[in-house]
Amino acid sequence: NFHEFLSFRGVTAEKNFQYTHKRFKIKKLVDEYLEWGIFPEVVQEEDVVLRKKILSEYFHLLVFRDIGERFSVDNTDMLKDLLKFLFTDITSCFSVNSYYKLARQRIPLSRDTISSYLSYIEESQYFFLLPVFSYSLKVQKVNPKKIICLDTGIRNSIAFRFSPDKGKLAENMVGSLLKMQGNELYYWKGKQEVDFVVKTDKSLTGINVTYSDIIKDREVSSLLEFKGAFKNVKRLILVTSDIEKTEKGIHFIPLWKWLISKNAFPAA
Image (cartoon, rainbow, N blue to C red; front, side, top):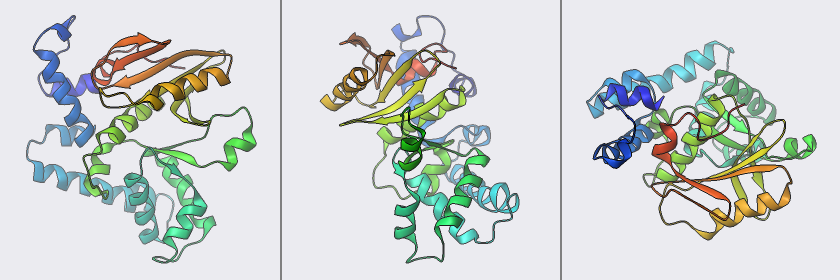
């Protein structure tokens, strides 16, 4: 977790640290955390070339041992292609049919095989595939699922990237940690989209992530639309780069602050 990551870097987030120079150091370390991920061997390695080599080896082990050998996968080329697609497309929605149409020109595959490999991938716990939030199980089943990966370090070492993708990385980090906290987690789609919905027995929490201090109107309006659609919405949260305030019933919180707080988001 982020506290352990800070410890590896010799940094402690003591009370009221945000009012000292340490705040800026921790914000910088958040970017490193997003880029290189959560594996201790990578965190402790200072050499960038060796970091990339370690992450590449982890991906190789994921394909051939953690999933390939464990589930007796025949078509490792397809498994590798599917994993690369999922890593590249984090925080987007995945559909078996869409991937089948895209990949069938490159590699031999079937929809049933894709579905089977997806179940193996989810069981490995390197990915979470989040359903759309609805009280109808049929609606959940027929809609695409949102891709969240466990570790952004592996993702960044093998994915096709055209930019630093900090927004995607931050959103993925929030989703991954929410899931690892044990939350029942979804995304929601109305006229607009809410990144995450945390469901408990009595309430719903809507969460958007924008790793920026320039807040687009849709980030606020989608949360308000979500609140208007359900009576039991308890909290609305907007994760930012550095803005902290409450406005229109929405709690704005910087990512760095949530990462060091145990109580910022609800847990099951």
